[in-house]
Length: 259
Image: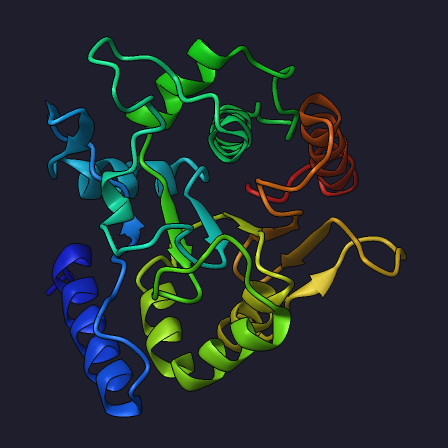
C-alpha cells in the first residue's frame, strides 16, 4: 500500500519530539516537508493555508522530473510553526502581496526557475516577484529543515551537525519519503548532501571545482545543487544567474539525463 506522506511525516515528527524531550533539548518541533496547496486563510493579520491535493500534484511533478526538495538549516523564528503552510506573502496585509524578505525573494525564484526549466535544463531568466510567487504558491515542492527546533536566525556548523547526528535516522526516513524527487537544493552547509549520500551512494561531483555547484546520481537520475543559504548577503540576480548557468552546464554535458 502506498504511504501517505503527511501521515508518515506526522509519525516522524512525533518521534523527533520524543527524542528532543528525552535529551532535554526542547519541547517544540517545527513541522516541514511537502507544502500545503489548499485554501488560503487570512486571520489576525497572518496568512495561513490548509492541506489540499499536494500529494497528487507531487506525484505528477516527480513523473515530469520536476520534483524539488529544498534542504535548509532551521526555522528562523522564536516559536515553532508548520512551514508546510509557508506562503511567501506579506503578513499584516490582507491583499495577497509577495513578501520582500530576502529569504523568500530568493527561495521563490529558485522554485520557479527549477520547476519550469526546459527539457534542455535551461532555467528561465530571473523572474519578477509576481511570476515567481505564483509558482511558489501553486507548485508542489518540499522544504526540509535539518534542525527542526526554532532558532535565532544564525546557527553554527557544529550546532547544525550535532542535530543532524542526533536525529540522522529520522531525517533519512523523511528524505526517503521523497525518493521520487529529481532536484535537490542543499542550503545547509553541505549537511544535506552528506545525508543524501547515505540514500544515494553513487552521488558524485560534476566538474573539478573544490566546491562544485552540482552533484548527481546516475542511478537515480537526480541532481543536488550545492547552494548558498537564501538569506546570504549576495546580489539576488547574480545569485540566480550563477545557479542557472551551473544547472545549464550540467545538462549540456548530460543532455539525456532525464530520459
